[in-house]
Amino acid sequence: MSKEERLKKLSELKAELIKLRTLQAIGGSLENPSRIKLIRKTIARILTINREEELKKGK
Image (cartoon, rainbow, N blue to C red):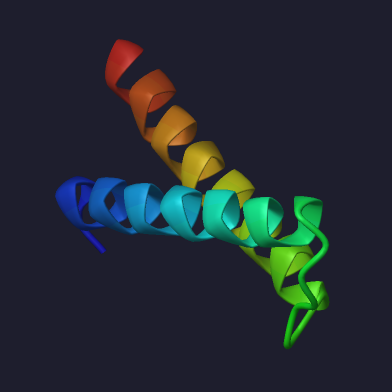
C-alpha cells in the first residue's frame, strides 16, 4: 500500500470513528460496538507504518 493510499484510508477511518463516537454519545445504539476498537487499532497501525518509513528516510 502506497503512502497516498494509507493517508486516504486514514482519513476515511478517522471520519468513520468520529461518526461512530458521535452516534454513541447521543445515545444511539451501534450495530457493532467493537468496531470502534477495531478502527482505533487500524489507525494506530497506519500511523506506525508512516512513522517507520519517515525514520528510515532520515538515516
